[in-house]
Length: 283
Image 1 (cartoon, one colour):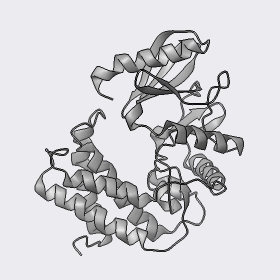
Image 2 (cartoon, helix red, strand yellow; image 1 turned 90 degrees about the vertical axis):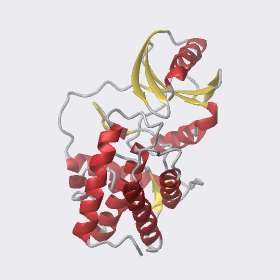
Image 3 (tube, helix red, strand yellow; image 1 turned 180 degrees about the horizontal axis):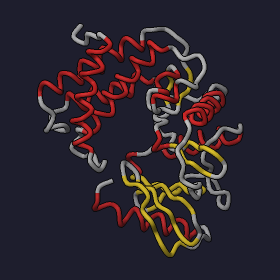
């Protein structure tokens, strides 16, 4: 979120919580990207705030409620207030349960895989309109071709990303294998380690595709504990996903700390992965 918008967004969250009878005298910023994630105290609620024009809050609330009802490992909305989207001063605000982190320890790949498998099982039961994963690939392609939005991206790197996104996106999309509703970005940043176990958050990126697309966001060891993985498809998905997230790091509005350094590092990883797997992206 643009720095100039943060004070207003924070005020919108505090005002929303207060209007619902939740005392919010202190605010801790937990995450700032396309939306602002805040911990409000002493009511201890997690507020997610986004500009009205750039949000899918209602979709995320609906998905989270339905998954929680079916016993999936997902973070829940705050039970003290009505589970809905609140609009205030040009922002949408949603209020979620704040989970105190469990005692720090390494998340085992087996636990991660089991939680993701349970999430996928619950998602297979949902019939909701969602975009296919190829639409997210196309969004990354549009960013790469837009020189105004990615002015620092060198021509050779722009060509590499564009060719990789186009070729692998098409190849995976035309495989014709089983597809289902996916989280879209179940990377470690969207997994909470709580006393209740692993819980997934942030469902705004839900899409349809092969489960290997989701697994490509998780640490490599996780797929070793997930049943029925197509290893060839997973290798393609890993490179595709890496190309997507690398593209976002070159967006002039990207706010990830160290994002440009990561973007440069990941370009090298993409080249190495393409060479190692013998992929020709110029076709």
